Image (cartoon, rainbow, N blue to C red; front, side, top):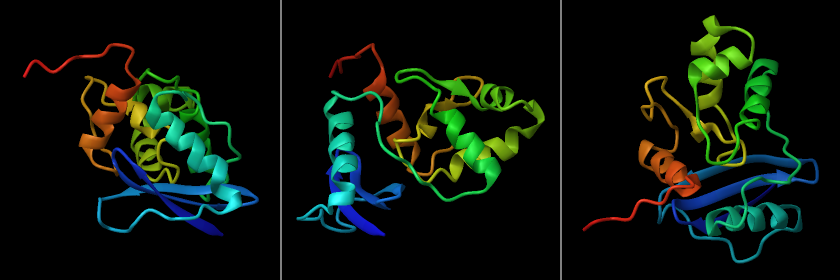
Length: 158
């Protein structure tokens, strides 16, 4: 497995993978580690597409993903890929789409274990009341990502 670190507006992103696909993408605070100078060939396309996402020129990722998880987690992560760019759904709706509204806690837990930050858009899942609940990368990052994807741009007044 190879790893690369790239600068993003939300911190340093770590991308891990190999010829079998991208296994993990995570974010860490500035200063935790320096961005990589060279990008391994197996991770070049992932780094490029992540940069395009942050530049606002990419809405979907066209990569081979290879996350490690249980069958249930894999089902949840696969369903997350069906949430369109700029849209959100609730944890309840995600559970409903997976066929069991009573599994909402398990679905939320699997959502929180998503190893592919941004590429599998767990940030698009919100509370039923519209609240920004739970996000492993920090709620401020979730808010930033949802605003980044929003078709409605709010200008700061001050």
